[in-house]
Image 1 (cartoon, helix red, strand yellow):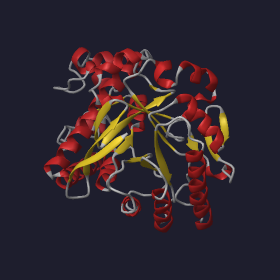
Image 2: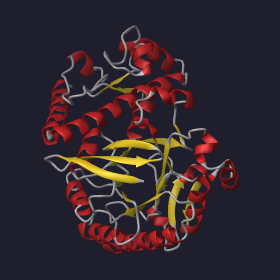
Image 3: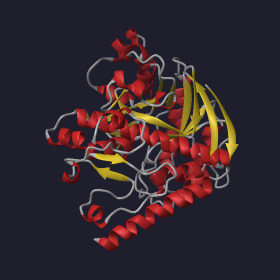
Image 4: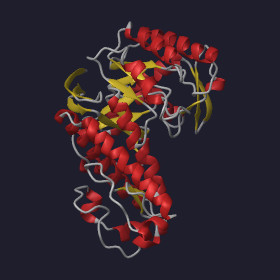
Length: 395
């Protein structure tokens, strides 16, 4: 894997290029969240309808394979690329995702990290984790981490850093599969521990950094100081990945701190709820009618396609959108699919939301290259805040 920074912008954002798995991916970039290597709803044959090469980054948790096919079988098949038939895609492995592999700090100990999964609570030791990695052969993978929420004690926080650094050494020592190693950084809501962990990870032979422990109880107001404490300790020439920042405003926080790779659990939660992203590419949220606000159909950035207002709406989700869904289907049809509980509703909706969110990242990259990222971020956040305020007044 090779990475280089191509542009910086006021406000801290940086744009770069990451070459991995035969692909040249521009950053900041979105890692498509998957379950067992495939998007939650999009079928493999429709992956090609998404923007290329932006959609080639697929993130998964090895813990997803705790049930079903064995690690030995995956290894004999040649890893995930061969098993899933996605040889042109880039797989990134992380222990945690924000959907079905959630860290459980109270059950973790010095032997391994604990996770809540569909198979129950699992204690994963570094040796077990590395066996998963060697079987699946991802292009890049994050080391095992002891992630803790923001409210834990200082002693528990310090222990999580010590364990994560020790597990990092164990993972690197037992790495036989290759792939780019991303050293995990934890530390909860304590700036000193975040710095200490980052400084320790930098000393190791890693290709990049995976910033963990976010989205676990910290507020948006305290997050910038934590992010800056980490990124200021990291070398500029290596990529930084983060888990737990979902909303567009949170992504912009991460970009401002110099983060390069983000997960996409936001898309999953939107799609599951029947919501379609509609905010314009310039980020300026337009005002909606009082009827729409009162019906809780839209908040200016997304619409609820389960709402009855769309039952006879023959327009696409978003005029001008080039995604497969908007080019071929209408709001009325997707509303119908939701009403009859047809899974095609989620498939079409995830295609649109993924396409739209990838477009959001493209606009962010362009703003960084133009040197206008700070203005873009300010306009986006302020227009979103103003719209929420107007909706509250109209309620």
